[in-house]
Image 1 (tube, each protein chain N blue to C red):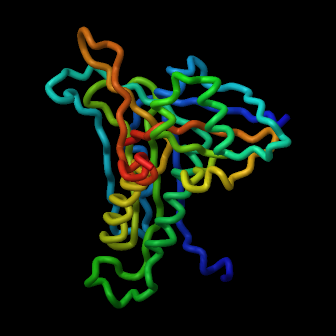
Image 2 (cartoon, rainbow over the protein chains, first blue to last red):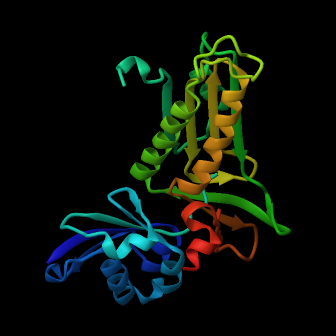
Length: 88
Length: 176
C-alpha cells in the first residue's frame, strides 16, 4: 500500500470537511497523481466540481495537469489539492 | 559561475498573521547603494458588484507559499541584476540592479480597506525596482498558494472564494 497525505485548502477544505487525510493507494498499480485524483473523487464525491479546476502540488511543487499520469507517488508524499488561487 | 557573479541582494519574504506595517518593509529594503525604492501595497475593497464586503478571509499553504514567494524574489534578483554598465543611466537602470526585495502577504481575517500584501524593492536606479515590483505582484497572483474568501455584510454571510484566473489556473487551462 502506498500511503500519502492529502492536504485540502479553501473550497476543497470546506467540502471535504477536513484539512488533511491519509489516503491509501494500491502500490502494485504504480500510483501516480492521476491515480490519486481518481481515488479522491471516489472518497470525496463532493469534490467533483472543485477538482475540475484544481491543480495538485506534490511535496510543495505544482504538477502540470498534463503530467499527472506521469508523476509517480511514493509512500509519505504530500499531495495538496490547490483550488484556483486568489492571493493579492 | 563564481560566487562573485551571484547578484548580491537582501531577500525577505513572509506570511503575516497580523497587520502589515508598510513602513517596516520600506525600511528593510532601504540601502545606501540604492537610489530607488518601489512599493506596492494591496488593499481590500469594500464592495463587490454592489454588495458590501465586511472582510476578506485569507488562508495559505504556508510552507509552499513561502517557497514560491522566495522563488519569485530570487528570480527577480537574477532578472534585474543589471548589466554592469554604470555609464548608461539614461535607461533608468544604471547597471547595478536590485539591492533588496521584501514581500509579505497577510493571512486570516482582513477588514475592508486594510493592507493584504506589500512588495518593496530597492535598486540602484528606478526602473529595476519599478519593473520588479510590478512583476512580483503578477507572479504572486499566478503562483503563490493563497486563497481569499469575501465575506459580505448581512444575509449572504457564507462568503465567496475568489479566483485570480492566472497562470495554471487560467480559464483555458482549467477547462482541459
